[in-house]
Length: 207
Image 1 (spheres, one colour):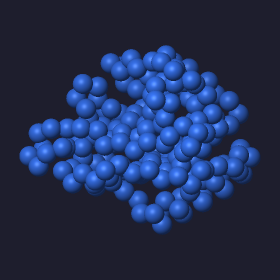
Image 2 (tube, helix red, strand yellow):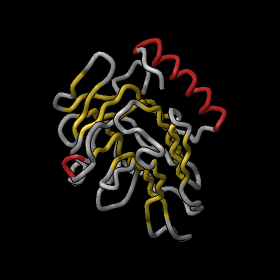
Image 3 (cartoon, rainbow, N blue to C red):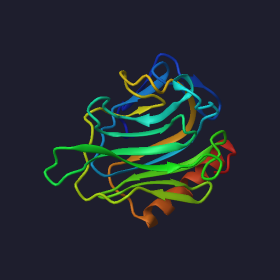
Image 4 (cartoon, helix red, strand yellow):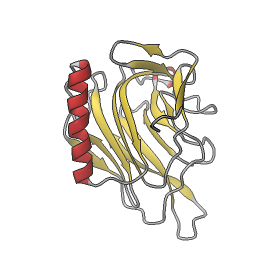
């Protein structure tokens, strides 16, 4: 977030609890002014107790995906029951075609969806990586050297954008932090340690 500037605002009425905020897709969410960079790293402490059984119960945790144009990135749970990080990349050397570069946390094996987890996603120059620091799981997409295709839309927390009706479920967010660079493993580890200390001190939660 941007220090000393308004960089986000609630839409309708996300539910605020003592330690976290609860969101519902397309209804109650946070609209940020944070623009997507070609390479980026996002930290969040998040959970979803929703079923992911259908569109009404699938959830987007953060998103700036441009529906129909296949631009941007999206962290979401779909009817597979898994949690995915998707980032748009060109799929040809002439940069005329765009596709999704995705990395997936498999339910139960890689993530306990209903419990708060510290999840880091890295949209790098050639790969997309999702790291569940709470469980010690790292998943990486196939390499793609054709380049990223960011969206012009700023990030939403807890919702997709209008036009995407497949994700109207709920999620809870305790922490969200955006970095407009591809952080190194060492830099990620330092940030993870600080976030864990902060969550334990402020909320009594171990992630």
